[in-house]
Length: 215
Image (tube, rainbow, N blue to C red; front, top):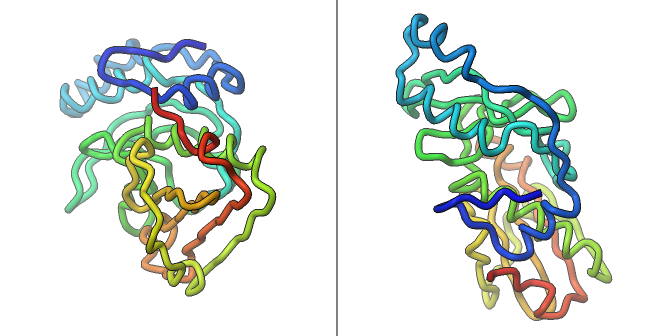
């Protein structure tokens, strides 16, 4: 499956992940709802953002994420809506399970959670896909995975680790160390001002080549 478009590059690892594990469902076009949305008062610019996302990502189903009950079942945009103090958002896809928040695209293209608060996880949808690819790649090769939650997750010392830039991390980040991949998940904690919702996954036994995905 080829998702490459100008200005929206994925790493070699993520392209391979999507090609091998991605499935595209038929979710149709948003073109028939453009005029009704305009008549309903939604700004043309925000409708355009939702349609562009849907044209590129609509119907794409990827393997589940380790947190957020797996993340979106598949990508697909819905009508834009304005969140006071945040700006315009639109749904990014249906959840796999019942969760109290929505998966949304933010005013600057961020991918995140809309709960009691807007919690951007990654600076772009590509960052989310990169995080899925990295997690899938590492989970197949790690010799051990340790899950930390709550205070233990927040207190994990990242000194000496290097942040992995391709995931475009905001609330959620990825870090590489000496044979280790550390995945930090703070989205639910930020969406509900609930520090106990933090999770950190530490995968060990990885070679450097397992953590390099650019190119």
